[in-house]
Image 1 (cartoon, rainbow, N blue to C red):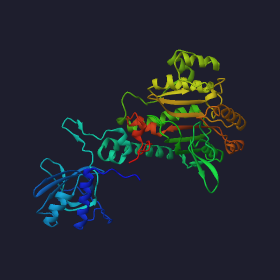
Image 2: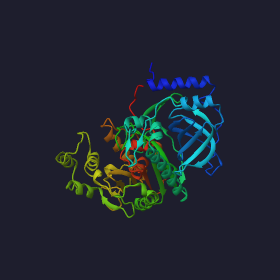
Image 3: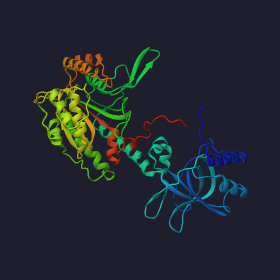
Image 4: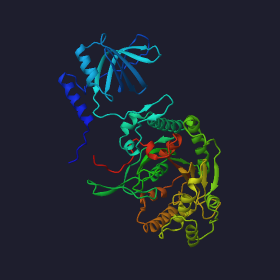
Length: 487
């Protein structure tokens, strides 16, 4: 049986908890506690928050609490407190701790140093904290001491991280604001927000290893979705011409600074448009977000349109010195060995090209750049390029060395799509870490006719990283995936 470790400080606080109950103070009351922050001189004010500091000074005491707005100083005088003096001396002086959540009723005033304060008349304990909070301190120069900075602890105990590190809380407030801004931007332009299944009978729309589960009633294997792309295209077949979804996707793959097994994608599809139109949309869309939130982003980036455009093979030539646009698979494999690209002997042409780009090019592209016209072998869901043989109408948007978005002129030929799916199955079944099944219902929907369209997937977590100056995806996830730890 697993048990929580109990420190000496825990034991002291547990004893205080028992003492509170002995003097008939409920440390976890259930009543409603209204808040009324009326910061006007001599007006009644009711606040609640977590104790950050306590200063006991005989007949007067100061408590600093933290609420959603910031810090508030509470002044308590034994002569004006609406409680018996023995309760004051015991409860306030001996049984309250840093980390406790309290409710304070009194009136507003400013100290001689103009600090906002509340002259307390009543204090109720709302929740007893049984653990010692990290004591983060800053000196007059802004230097931080005793910070809660161990990354593993911070990510495992995000609730503590949010309590003591205000800058972390601001990251998530910015995330919420950006997602809200995106949703409003699309809704105002008559895009329809939809919902598609997370449990899927076929893991389609991308090439990735899925998480597998089992439905007892249906007696069938299901998969957590790796993509919602095929479902959204089915909606275009059904006549919904502009759709989007904030899709929670799951991929049973590695974890690093840019990847988490559970992540958020904004998928968006528009009928009667192509990938050239989507490039213009993407520039305008991201520029709007940039202008709204640019103060929080490193100034070395510039998201003002137009963005730079480089073809896939041009990028490889720029960053490796090799023109491989007309080479066959064996020649490309030889180049990989020459420039130290890590590859697998089972990899085919499309996979080799992908490894060259991801290992040698992507990280070097800092300013927003459209990498356009990918080889058809790498793009099973994109249309063949209308002007260039062997290429597809696809682009990736790279910013700060990371793929932010992926877009196509979507393939709507059911016969061609089925052939490409079969080629992908033949290819990836030889690589144990990949799996892709044919969604026959999606092929059937294409046979009913899908209008020409374009689609794009934005990595929301990576977008938030960009706009909050974070270099690790775990910093923008409230509860990132972590290795199981026995307490």
